[in-house]
Image 1 (tube, rainbow, N blue to C red):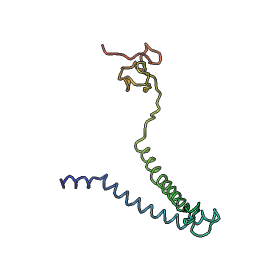
Image 2: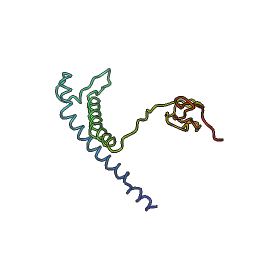
Image 3: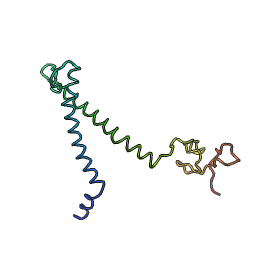
Image 4: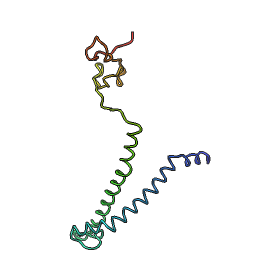
Length: 152
């Protein structure tokens, strides 16, 4: 039992996930500090508030609404999301495209005559109903579109 737990913990993806969470928490702390130290005062200046904008509130009746904290959290989220997108997602997508280019999934399609679902034009068998299709190169059918063939 302990050996199985040890092998689970030492798997690469579990360790990678743990490292990613720790780095993400540290990155979040840095971004939150940046937002509080630099961006919040600029937002406060733009809104006509001086000092710490994150402490701004408004009151309705006896209820206090701390909207400044929400603005801080929103700015932090946008900064973290944009940093992740531009520093992680875009470079990884470019590397992936460079080393493993994807094929166009929107290739020419035709409808299967048996089930009327779209299938790739060059398909010889329908992926939905598994019926055999007339190949595109079949001279007996213009465009190769015909009825599903059955094996004799």
